[in-house]
Image (cartoon, rainbow, N blue to C red; front, side):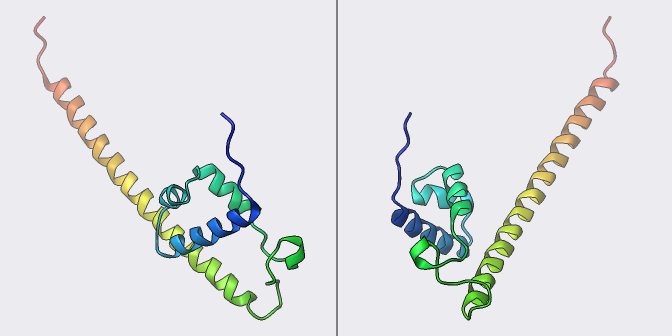
Length: 119
């Protein structure tokens, strides 16, 4: 299946929308669904996103050492901290679920060992 190609302006607009959604605490799955693209496309776009550079080269006008660059860095740090907190919650939930399943399996095996043989 041949995928749809997006114009660079459309990608930039969708990435701006994605940043807004990320700041609101949305997961990457929810963000990619809202953008109408796959999670892998979203990740590829984020990786391609220019961090700094002159506007005529497709980058934004914020580069290191300029006023305003601190605001962009602070926003990126805030977004990463939020994503980190979400990932920590996911890992904690998964570990609790794993422990619950291991306990259930252990109880099942104990009951099986205690059962007398009929043969």
